[in-house]
Amino acid sequence: MGSEGFVAEPATRFLTDSDVAALADWDSAIAALRAAYARADEPTATPERSVAVTATGWQRTMPSAPPGARFAGSKTITASIATGLVSYLITLFDQNDARLAALIDGNRLTGIRTAATAAAALTALLPRQPIVAAVVGSGFEARAQVRAASRVADLSSVRVSSPTAANRERFATELAAELGLPVVAVDSAEAAVRDADLVLCAARSRDETPTVFAEWVADDATIVSVGSTTPAQRELDPALIGRAGLVVADALAEVLHDSGDMIAARAAGFDPDVVTVSLHDLLGGRVCRPASGIAIYKSTGSGFQDLVIAELLYERAVERGLGTPLPVGILTIRK
Image 1 (cartoon, rainbow, N blue to C red):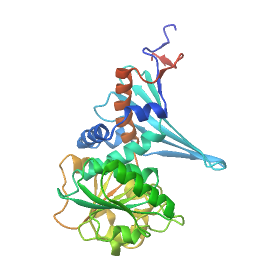
Image 2: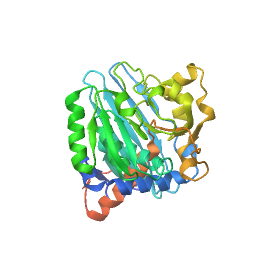
Image 3: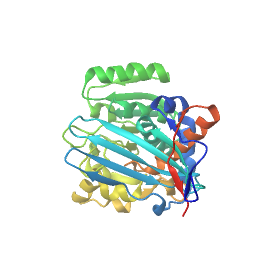
Image 4: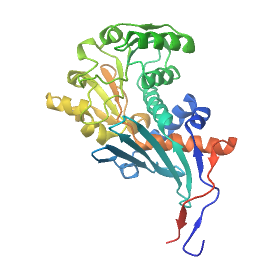
C-alpha cells in the first residue's frame, strides 16, 4: 500500500444479528459489565452522545474507549421518520494498531447490554432474599430485563402489565415456561407494582406521561428505569424521584440532564442531584445503598456498555470462527 498506509490484518470481521445471538449469554455479559463499571469513571473516555437531526430522520452516535479495554469505537443509530425503521451499527477499532477489527449489528446487542447493565446494578442494590418482581411492559426490553434479573436475583414471582391483553398473556406464558417460576399477567401497572420488591420499567406511555407513580411503590423497593432516555420521554412520576434515597445512573451527566424523568422531577421542585450517584461508584464499592428507602437504577444507555459487550463477543467470534471476514478493508494511515 505504500509508505503512507496499509490494510491491517487480520481482516475486519462482520457479526450479524444471528452471530450476536449465538455468541451472547447473560452471565458473561453481566460479569463483563460489573468488572468494567467497578473501575473509576473517566468521563473523557465516554463522551456524551451526539445527534444529527434532519427533515427525514436522525442519526445518534455514542463513542467510547473503555479504560483498560483493547478496543475503542462507537455505536451509530440511524432512524427514518417516514418508515419508522432503525438500524444499529457498532464499530470496534483496536487501540494498539488502529485496525478496524469488527463491524457488529447492534440491534440485539443493545437490548442485551441494557438489561445486563441493569442486572449488574441489581447485584449491589437487591437484598439477598426472595424477590417479587413487577414488569411494566411486555416487549423485547421487558423480556430482556426479566431474563437478566433472574440471573442475579432470587425471583419468587413476576407480575407483568402492558396495554394489550394478548401481549401480556403471551409474555406470562413464555417467561413462566422459560424461567420456571410463576409469571402472572395483570390488567394495570398499579396492580403489578403494588407491594413488589423489584419494579422493572421498560415501556414509555404513548402520551409521555409516567407509567409508574410514587404512591404505588413500596417503601424499600428497587426500581429499574430504562424507558426514558431523551428529554422528551417520560416513565417515572416526579414524586418517585423525590421519594428516592438513592438514584444510580449508568451515565451520570446524561441521566441528570438529558432524561425526561429527571428534567420533570427538577421542574416539580425535587433535586435529583443530591441523591444520584454513578454506577461506577456503586459497583466500585465507593457508595452503598442506604439501609432504608427506595433505590432507583436510571439508564439512558451508553456507548461504554456497547463497547464492553462488543469486545466480549468479538473475542468469542475469533475463538469460535464465527462472523464473516470482509474481503476488503479500510486503509490504516501512518502519521
